[in-house]
Image (cartoon, rainbow, N blue to C red; front, side, top):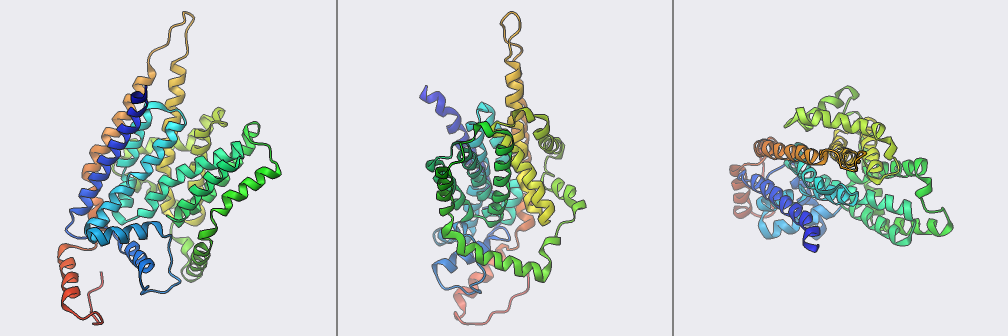
Length: 404
């Protein structure tokens, strides 16, 4: 029994290791450190461990910078970037797997997790160096489950779990943490609106439990006050909110899943319709999470005009597939007048999702190298020049280099 119960998690872990290894190999094969943003994470990390060469007003959540600086000290920048990129690219899929398993989706959770791990949207973020965003997407799912569990139970333990997940997310990615606040609010609205009978009675004790969760976020309050001030200043100076026009949302979304558009396009459309089509499951946790993430991603994209919120629709789409597979599988198990089960629709559903996972992995093999090349601004010659400057010039020498 134990072996049978552990077979799926072990298989998922092996699949995620394979996906992370593939990303690592591609990122390391470019002859120099890959991505655009990894230099930022390394600079933030070195500022934590040593003197900051930039303004103290430039801050960022510390988890990824600390990991990047530590890995660079051991492996050097090229392999550190590849290792961190490979590992974090598996985290959204791992978070999704945990949520689907907890929502009783069954074996289909495995191919759905593989779909996310190999998706073009994850490859795109790994290609530019969006490591905090990728790690945050995995934590986001766990944090939302913790929020929903607290709303249902109202216990101090559930509040502490919610606060710990929120703290981990806030210390990893400000972008995803902002999404978490919006989506968590939607989770609360959905629960209060349609699942009042499942919620803990609102008492003073439960309000106190909620404060336990909020208290976990106190360590990051100074960080986010500084971040908020910087974002507000940048918005006044450059109009940060006008980056994405409403009419361009569809084309930006198409670009995210351009590696397999004929599969992802109907899947995303289905995700947008699922909250309505399956609204009879509105007291179910999987429906609540899928609905909140879907509408939260759309709302933040349209209001803040930031295309990076569209990446959450990948999670929404796959959660929606899990909900549909569970729904159709349950219908296939209905008995007829003779007491016999109907045709094994669930097997065909799992086969279809598995085929989706295989196709996604196949196209990722050819797509991800191009995504890396698109965002890799350093090459082996440039890295050799940097190494020569480091070893052949004085530490206080003024060096002029061409603009990248």
